Length: 501
Image 1 (cartoon, rainbow, N blue to C red):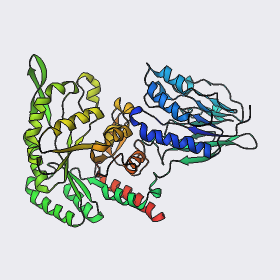
Image 2 (cartoon, rainbow, N blue to C red):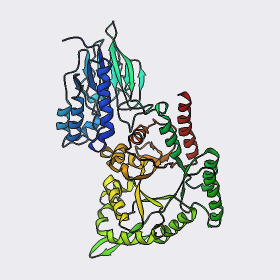
Image 3 (cartoon, rainbow, N blue to C red):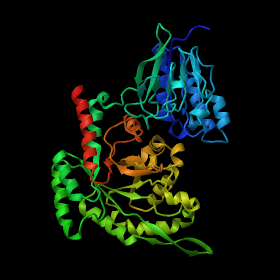
Image 4 (cartoon, one colour):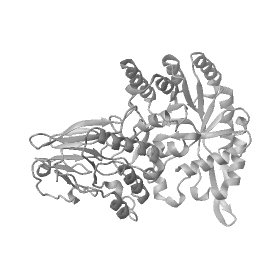
C-alpha cells in the first residue's frame, strides 16, 4: 500500500433529512475542496448524521461517494441516537479501512469505551476519534497526534487537535470547516490547513447583503420600550419590537409620539409581541378537553394597541394548549382567535406565529406537552389563522426556541426550521441559549458574535443568501438589559468587516 501523506478530516455535520439542503451543500463543498487541495483520503470523525436514522446515513454516504477519494469513518454519539436504525446507519457509513498511518478510535459511547482502551499507540500515528480524550490521558496523547470533534470548536494542544466541524447551525468560532493533516519528513502528523466554508463570514459578504442584513437587524425592547426606542433613534436601529402592555396606560400617548420620532429618524418596521391565548380544561362529551379560551379580551386590547401604534406586524405565540387536544379544539380556537384578532382584520398588519420549546413541565408530563414544538405543528396553526377572514399570517421563527427543544431539536435543528418554513417567515427572534449546571438551557441570553456556542448564525446567513429565508426583521430578544449590547456587537462586527474590504 502506498503511504498516505495528506488527509482531510470531517466532523460534526449533524445531517438530517429535514435540514439536508444547507448541510448537504456544505458537505459537497468539503468533498470537492479536499480533492482540490491534494488530499489522498477523507476521514470522518463522527456525528456526520443528526439523529441516527438510516435515511440520513444514505444521504451522507451518497454525497461522500461523489468523491474519488477513499472515505473512512468512526462514529460519534449522534450516530447512536436511533437504536432501532443505528446498526444499519453505521453499516452504511462504515466506508473504507483507515489510510496508512491512521487509527480510528470509536469513542461514540465515551473515550474509555472506545477500541483503544489504555493501549499505547506507536509513534508517528494519527488517531482519529469523535470525543476528545480526557485530560491527563498521556499514554494516549503522546507520542501520536489525536484528532477529535464533538466540541464544535477549532483548538490545538500538544498531541491533540480538535476540528470545528461542518454544521452551520453549531460551528463555533467561524464558519463550517474541515482540517487537513499532513506527514512531515520525520513521519509525524501535523495539521497543515483549516479550510472554512466561503461567503459566510461577515468579511466576505457583498455590499448588498451586508446592507440588507444590517437594515433588518432589530431589537426587542422587552420591558423597556422607551429606553429601547431611544437607543434605536441614537444608533439607527430600523426594526423594533415592543412587548404588549410593557408601558403604563397613562404613558401610551407619549409612546406614540416617541414612535413617530423613531419613524422620522429612519425607523422602518414596528412589531408588537402580543400576549398568547390559553385554553382551560373542562368536561366535554365525557372527555377532559379545553372548553374555554383565556386571554381573549386582553389579546383583543393588544391588537387595538398595535393598530394605534401604527405597527407593521405582530408576533403571536402558538396557543397554550396540549398537543393532544389540538384537533378536538379547532372550532373553539377558531372562534376565540377570530374574536381576539378582529382589530387586525383588513388592516394589512402581518401576524407572525411563533414556535415554542419543550419545558421541564413537558418532560415531566409528556402526554400533556404543549403544542407548537415542531415545524408541522406551526404550519397547522398558521393554516388555522389563515382561515379567519382578513388576516395576513406568516411564521415568526425563534431560533433559540428551536435550539432549546430536545428531543425535537435532533430531528429539527435550527436549519430544518429554515428549510421547512422559510418561505413563510415574516419575522425572527434571535438570542443565545446557555447551558445550566444541570444540563438544561436558559433562553434569551446575549449573542455577541456570529459563531458562538450554542447557536451559530452561519446557517442563518447561508439561508438568507440563498433565498431560503426572505428578508424579514430579526429582533434580538434578550433579557436583563443586554439586548442593546448584543445589537451593537453584531452590528459592529459587520461594520468592521465592511471597513476591511
